[in-house]
Image (cartoon, rainbow, N blue to C red; front, side, top):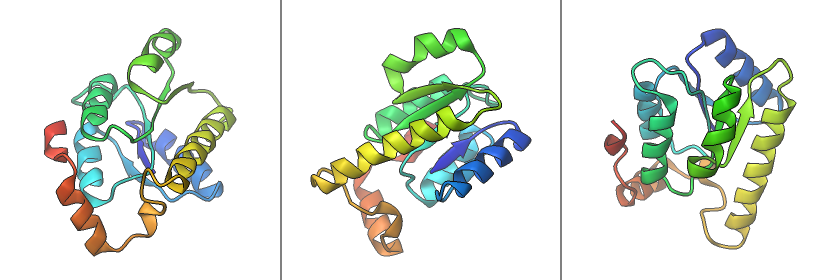
Length: 150
């Protein structure tokens, strides 16, 4: 999964927590860096902070949804007002930041389980992280350009 978080300490905390749950993670501190990570490897899920340098996370989420429509996005924000207004439009979940990371890990677990169920039903590649570099390149050739996010 890709963690897009501007605060380095919080990013390390999320990375450690999600790795402890058994997930492999990539990290980015900005939307521009996230685009680079998306070019390296297609994640199964994105955990997205809204306060990003250079480009607001909401704008990036909308662009990401346009280029990767099936990719679950979990907004992880400290803004309670935004929490109420953002979820239905663009993201699969919105979790308020606090010291208890269980709501985030539960949302991630739930969304990835739903995605696995879709894969089992044949609507997506069952093991995208286990595919070869060659098959990732071939799949990327058929995907909308990540450059459209820039």
